[in-house]
Amino acid sequence: MCGIVAYIGHREAYPIIVKGLKRLEYRGYDSAGVALLTPDKALNIYKKSGKVSDLEAETADKDVHANTGMGHTRWATHGAPNDKNAHPHLSQNGEFAIIHNGIIENYSTLKQALIKRGHEFKSDTDTEVLIHLIEEVFKNNSVSFEEAVRMALTQVVGAYAIVILSKSDPTYLIGARKGSPMVVGIGENEHFIASDATPIVEYTRNVIYLNDGELVIIDNNKLTVKTIDNTIKSPYIQELEINLESIEKGGFDHFMMKEIYEQPRSILDSFRGRTHVNDATIAMAGIDKFEDKLKNIKRLLIVGCGTSWHAGLVGEYLFEDFARIPTEVEYASEFRYRNPVIDENDFVIAISQSGETADTLAALELAKSKGATIFGVCNVVGSSIPRITDAGAYTHAGPEIGVASTKAFTAQVTALILMSLSVAQKRGTISKERLRELLIELETIPSKVEEALKLNDMIKEIAAEFKDSRNALYLGRGYGFPIALEGALKLKEISYIHAEGYPAAEMKHGPIALIDEEMPVVVIATQHSNYEKVISNIQEVRARKGRVIAISTIGDEHIKDHADYVIPIPQCEEAMLPLIASIPLQLLSYHIAVMRECNVDQPRNLAKSVTVE
Ligand code: F6R
Image (cartoon, rainbow, N blue to C red; front, side, top):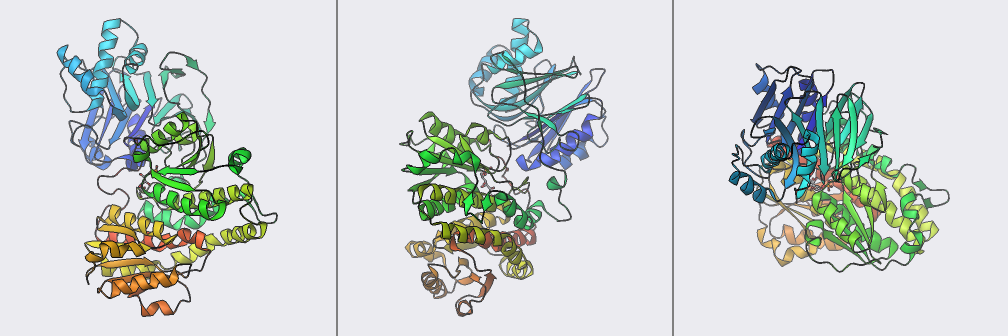
């Protein structure tokens, strides 16, 4: 939520910042701004509501020369998305400028106190309050700029990743984080700060992931990391794993389509090196360490939000099927405020693409505080969730830039398949033969996904039929149910068509009233355990003139008698169905959204990384 990027060094800062902001636009895109500080101490601030391209248009005839600067792309929390609320914000005296990702929860109390002491605010944001506070601490305590920032942060409640510069020193930049991510890039006589590594990767591969409660100070090309309580830290410099191609569109019109087509590779990367078919074993080093505890596990909790919650639901079926562990899936936002009953015997798995979702992180912290063992299934390496978990599995899907999650979902499901099988093996709830069969099947999935992608043209034609629908229903049973939920979410979030995912049998307890000849009903009707029952549910839809689009198994001729449109996908083990059946649903929502001229990669009101609760 909100993207920040800053540069200090020998190059022109503005092009680096603007390019970086475009890469971070997935985090928010309702306004953008830059602060540029020249060597002769001129501070130029440009900001504009709308996208980074609107900011570029705004600055087309402006002076943008500077070697120090910072930029922000916003997802509004406090204050409407307009020019005045766009970042950067200035202190009262114009000396300090700030960009901020996160929420200052006690901003209202701080603001009232500052107003009483004569401060005037130009925006409605919490961020402006923080920079006024820093100015006040600086003046009242006769301390250095760095010390003023540190002292002010001790008064702040909430989450932040901030970068601050001071007009009087163009060789100086301060960053700080608590609850929102921050990466520092170290180049040759230059430094970068950003919300993730994508703005940095083409300039340097050496980065530091700042920990919560740390500040980074870049002073005349010298970098220092210290904590908010003033302890100097020796930062761990790591090498970036991502490459430039993985964050560019590579010939596709949209990142979402590129990411849908990457799935044969991303699924393979999720299990590559972890499965050993010959001796029917799974290697997941972190989890293996908990073998004894896992053998006696009584209950498993899975937490996540949105698409990751849907992957969690698949996880529930997997862990119950294979490992025979009672499993509950929780919306992280509900779990964290519900006073849940949880203790040191529980295991909690958090699922998150970004590894930064505020609610998921907080749910996990709560579970940890109650003594539970906490695991993570995350995509972004070095993000907050993997840093606090006891163990876990990276999904290795590579950067996902389209706001609607596609390859991250199938990679999460792949990781959960492996985790559940690994735990089942430890608990002795699966035979070696069955495990081997499943591992062999998993190896076939990338080519089956490849097959499913070949349905693209057919799906585009179906999309043309349904592009003007106002509602849609997605139905499934068993593993088909989370797929239905995920299909419906994909459609609503990028095409703005209202869509509901439902357990197929639940339809007759309410949603059936919605069905008429206008209503497209997408049904997961593959030849698995509930096939006959799903066919009965289809009949119920057809009897009310609903138009059925069936996701079926290749070779099923019978289904043609029941559905208006049939999308045949390759046969697979039922537990792996989400990996294949999700593909046509992703494609369907993509084409409908493109036909409706929606912004597929950056749907309205959304942001990819939801770092506020
Ligand atoms: C939908 C989508 C969101 C995310 C949710 C959680 O396509 O992407 O629903 O799944 O915001 O995000 P992560 O997985 O980063 O915790």
